[in-house]
Every structure is written in structure tokens, then in C-alpha cells.
Length: 155
Image (tube, rainbow, N blue to C red):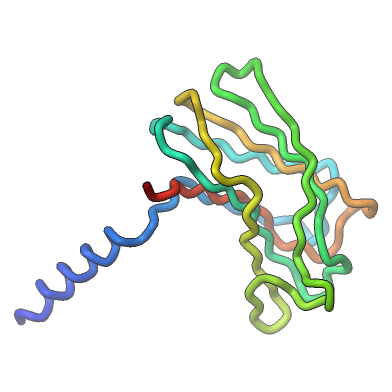
């Protein structure tokens, strides 16, 4: 029975070496059709204002998604609640040959695409990130879920 304590020790040591994510949340898209009026909002708290972070956009879609990219407006609401900024970004989902950049299983594809790094939060408190798809087609078909992942960059 000496194996159990060794396994627990190894797991705790290995988990200490992995980068810890600060926040990750995904929102399911109803009927796999992302309407431009549906603007998922993600709220998270920042307490460490000395570190830098990486922010990722996450998306799950079917193989029938008709585009090689997605255009988004990303709105950030700061802790003082009076200040917001909006950035328009293009997120590539496929290479020039049409091969998906994410991980696929059967007809489902998952992407975790870097959208900001290094990102520095100068104020502690609650932040809100809102995703708004701004593609030319509405609703945007074959999108199963979207989300945000925020990771602290190791020093």
C-alpha cells in the first residue's frame, strides 16, 4: 500500500508544474446557429495585477462550418463599470488549404485561438468580456459553443 502515497505525491508535484488557468468558460449556442443578437458575456475577477496573461477565444463547430475564420467584436468592461473598450478581430480557424487548425473528432472541431498576449490588468476587480459575432451571415450556422480562456503567463 506504499504506492498510493507515492502516486498522490507525484500528482501534486506534476500539477504544480502545469500552468494554471485563471478562467475558462464556454457557452452553448442554441440550435448550433449563433444569432448576432446573442452576445455571450464572461465575468471574472483579477487579483494579481503584477502578472501578465494570455487570452484565448474558444469555439466548437461542426465540419460543415462554412468559413475559414470568424470576425468578432470583443467588448471589455473594466472594474470601475464606467469604462469599456471594443476591439474588432479576425480569428482564423483554417489554413489556406482549408484544413481546420483546431482538434477534431469525427465531425466536431475545437479551437483555442490566442487573441491577446501579453495582457496586463492594471486594476484588480471584476472584468466582463462580451463576444459578438459580426459575420455577414445571420445566424452563423454550425457553431456549437464559444468561450474565453484566460491564463497567467509563467514568470
